[in-house]
Amino acid sequence: MGRTEISIEIGASPEKVWEMLALDRLLEWSEGYRGELNSVEYTSEVHSPEDKFRVGASAHGIPKKEGDINFEITESLENEKLTYRIYGKISALATHILEPTEKGTKYTISADYEMPWGIFGKILGPLFFYRVMEKEFERDLKNFKSILEK
Image 1: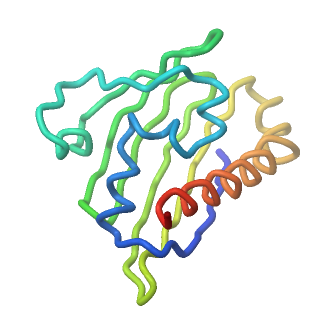
Image 2 (image 1 turned 180 degrees about the horizontal axis):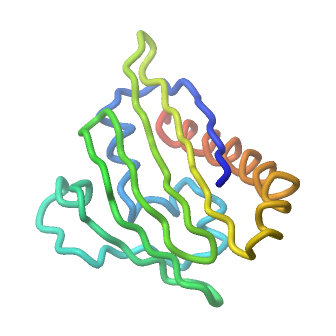
Image 3 (image 1 turned 90 degrees about the vertical axis):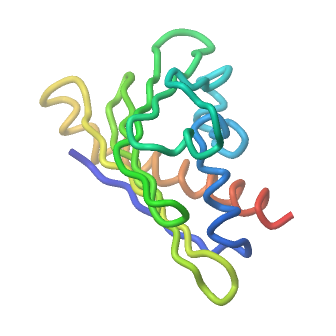
């Protein structure tokens, strides 16, 4: 299993940052998901904005080509921490941590990956995939920050 983690300071309140973490808003700021998916739609019932963040909430990424991606929230502390499992080509556990600061919010995103392909995945992950994901996280966090600081 591999891990990627990166943090950034955002000039917005934790409440505003939290709203952007809704699964159906991923494509607004994540170029990686935007490249793979047409949309992300909740598969669990959503009657209020809070329902999008409750433990057990689930969503399905509608792929552009092939390879479904599904999400399920496993931990949710409003305006503080959101964790969800990602099922698809690669399985991952993504965690978003929000910490209030004088200027806004320190936002940390981390992902723990389970690579496919057995022993080849264990070798190729550290050599290639984790570096690619770190670059993608950096790009996505710049987008995230730019949107929230407008």
